[in-house]
Image (cartoon, rainbow, N blue to C red; front, side, top):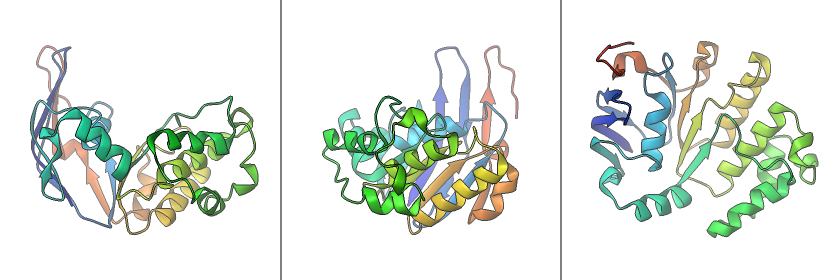
Length: 218
């Protein structure tokens, strides 16, 4: 279970985001909606430990990971969190297989690669260079890479942002199927995808962003 308590992030440009308390239950899927700048991606970065909050707590299974040393946060992210980026974060010059095998450098067991590529419908592309893949195929590779280590938590930041609705829906359905039983938190701007998730969270009602100069916006 992930509990967000009295969370606030202050940035060097004087912008600021405060969050109401939130709870994400184990094994459920959540989608975060909201205007740009309302703190959706920032929340994912803080849960992953890549970004530290200015104040507040992020309790994961009862432990305040926000207060943990960065080395412990990094180790937890590698072992327990699968992160899916909007821009894929793949190495174009390498094959699909090699992009997943890179995780071996972090001592991740990648033995489930073929199984996940099959579930994503792209096993036949395993030896293909990433630069030769379509946007939808690249996103499926990114999902397989995030799930290969069997994470407890899946964080997906606009995983369909670069895709049309039809392909985006298929990608989302594949993600939900492959991540069944995990805690999944997904950011999207496409309200049409919300019906696929267990719960929808309107971040415009959860956060209070303040931009430089003190102006508040939804």
